[in-house]
Amino acid sequence: MKLSVNMFMTLDGVVQSPGAPDEDTSGGFTRGGWVAPLFDDDLGRFVDGYFQQTEALLYGRLTYEIMAAFWPQVTDPENGVAASLNTRPKYVVSNTLTEATWNNSTILSGDFLAAIRDLKKQPGQELQLHGCARLARALHDAGLIDVYRIMVFPLVVGDGKRLFGADGPPTGFRTVSAETTSKGVTALTLEPVPYATAGYTVVDGKEQIEE
Image 1 (cartoon, helix red, strand yellow):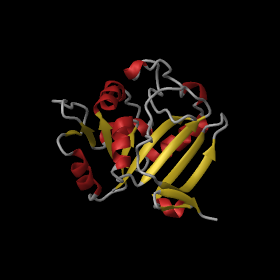
Image 2 (cartoon, one colour; image 1 turned 120 degrees about the horizontal axis):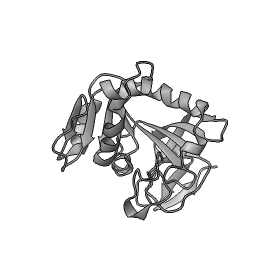
Image 3 (cartoon, one colour; image 1 turned 90 degrees about the vertical axis):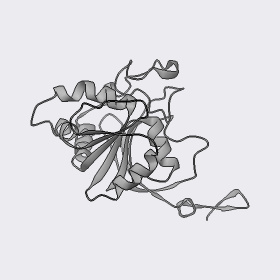
Image 4 (tube, rainbow, N blue to C red; image 1 turned 180 degrees about the vertical axis):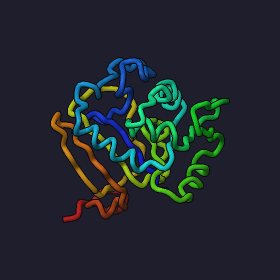
């Protein structure tokens, strides 16, 4: 399976608490819920499309608990997102969670990077991570992500959790697709490539732009 990360992101790179004001207030974050005013049918079709490629799902504890409290109640058979979330295998990375009751859930504790490498060796389409900023950053830093789907919202919120940290590895990307919704959200599908092939080489620790 390919590992994909699927993120809503502000223009200044924040991925924290997109769905609701109280979704994730850690660090004193008070500007949650920024997705709703800009979500439209165009973005809905994009989201539906990537859920059709779901083989299994990967979560950190916080996002898992948020999702598990809501999605099992959505039983409409015509809701493809709910069908994927409720029926596909789910893996939650946690050293503190003792029980995962959402259908088809497995807790990954200990060396989660090794466990995820093993999951990627299994057949199928995509092992998908949705949200989970800390886990996504750890997977990015470890070079385990094959596909990045990033929905960039035309707003800035300031402080908050980010996917790409200042201490992360330099990474190039190939743009597989880029679409803009009627409300101005840019939906990007990216694949990582070696940093040097993205237009830069590093000589004696300094970036050199390729002409």
